Length: 388
Image (tube, rainbow, N blue to C red; front, side, top):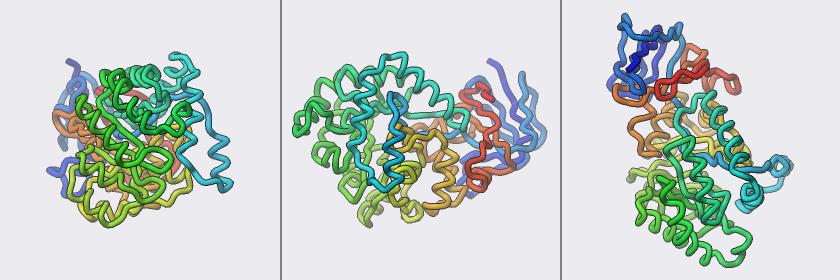
C-alpha cells in the first residue's frame, strides 16, 4: 500500500479535541501521513519518510467537506422560477413537480452526466463525502432508477419518495403515501441507506411522514426528515421522537424544538443556500448550538431552491447570517455533516479516518468566510487520491 506524506502544513484543522480545546482541534506546523485510503498519523515537526510527498507550502489543510443533503440526480432547469422569486414571488414546495416531469422524461445517460458533473464540481470545492437523495421520480421504477444512479457516486443514498404528491395522485395524498410505504419502498430499499420525507405545507403532514419513516425503519433504513422550512411545524419533534439522524432546514424553530434537539442525537442540518435562494429568513443557528445541539451545514444542491455545490458559500452565509463563528461553521461543514450521516470515519483528520483532506490557498480556514466567493481550494484528497 502506498504511503503519502502531506508536509509543511502551516495550520491543520483536525476536528480532534486532543490537539486543541477549540472546535477545530487546530495544529500548527503539521504533517499528515496517509496509508492508502486511510490516515495513518498526524504530527508536528519533521515529517517521516513516505512513498509520495505533497508539499503544502505553509497552506492551511482542513478535513474534506461532508455534504449531507443533496439532490444531484435530476433533469431540467428552474432558473425562471428563481428569477420570479427574486422579483417577489414566494417559494412553495409545489415547484418540485416541474423537475419531476423533466426527470421522468430524461434517459439514464442524461441524468448520469448531470450528476457526475455536479459531483466533480463539488469535489473541486472541497466536498469529499456527499449524500444523494431521490425524490424526482415519484414512481417505484423512477425512484429506484435515481437511487441506482446515485449509488455510482456515493454510498450515502436516501429514498425520498415522500417529496411531494405527484400530479397523478392530486387530492389523494394518503393513497400516495401507501404507495411510498409499499411497492415503492420495496423497489428502492436495496439501493438506499436512508429514508426521508418532506414534512411541510404543500408536501406531507406529520402522520404521513411518521408512516413513511416507520415503514423505512422496518426495512432497515435510517431516518432523515425535511422540516420547518416554510414555517413552524411538528417536523423537528417528530424527527427527534423517531431518532432520525438529521432533521434538515430548521428555519423556523420554537423553544420546544430547540430543547428537543438539544436533548437528542438528531443533528440540526442547516441549508443556508436555500434560504438565500428562496428569500426565507435565515435560521438562528447560534441559539441551537448554544442550547447544546449538534449542527451541520449542507448545500441542498437541487435545481429549484438551492442550485449550488459550494460548501464555502454555505460557510460564509452561516457566519454572516446565522451567528456561527468561522471555526464553528467549518466544523459544521465537516464533522457536523459526518454526524448527520452517522459516519465516524469522515469529517476528521485523525488516525484511522478516511484520507479526505482539502488544501486551501490560504493561511487559515478563517479565509473561507473572510474571502467569500473566492475559489480557495488548491487541491482535494479524497480517499487518498489527489485531485487538483
